[in-house]
Image (tube, rainbow, N blue to C red):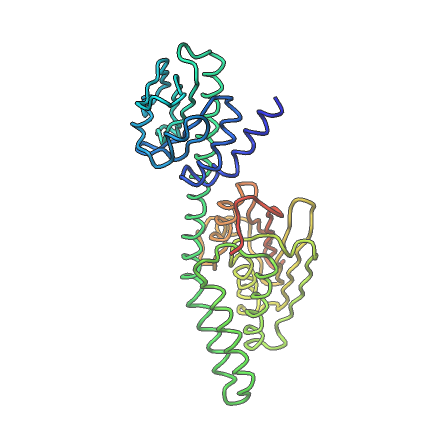
Length: 355
């Protein structure tokens, strides 16, 4: 039982990458151990993706599935009790072929081969069926993760398009105001601006560490301080344990930009606080302002994307797409009482890679 569980678990990291020749070749030895068959093959609808076990001198990855002479490819289990693959010296004499199903589609087949012809034991058939179900489940998860990452990338592109006109205008205005009175400061601001833009629009950077995100939030704040001077007061308090937490890129900056817009730009308040706390397996990040605040119905509308705010709904969706429905943003606010946007996310999640 322990060996079977170990073999099953060992297939998981490979098949979570999808059903490909590479993932199949890495998973096949563990499926061979799990089924206790003489040989195992994983195939898509046309080609053998991997073959391990006895008979590997006659069968290999890249062969057409027809060369296995074991049937299969349909949406039901097939048993071949008298296998003849056409090679006299091949030791394989019987086979069970089970479709690999993802949702309702057959994406491939799992072949289990045996050296004795005749009836396949029911317990062997069940094991092969369960192994094929395991393959299908992991491939389905890989597809879901791929779809989730594609969605997260699309929403990140949408956020970039949304924030860039407002941010670029304000940043360039701050630079323009400093050119004649303080040219050295203007040069520094242009450098900060270019580095932030490079970070924000890096195409292959859907996930970053919280430390990276906060570093570029500071560059954004440098530009905002050039606009508002001493009117903008920022306090940052971050637990060191959370700095390596992985987070979708451009998740914190829109929260800070909203805090500034709802405070200083409206002539109310001027204090922004960024606090990140360690809660064992989770991280809580709070961005607070002392601006005008909002009623609960407007806060709900902001998270649903029914206002003209910058990016709150987008950030909320990307967090949930990446980490699950239990994560995302909450808004704590009341009229004339300021606003706090609370972000909750896990410290780590398999499959989320920092570029």
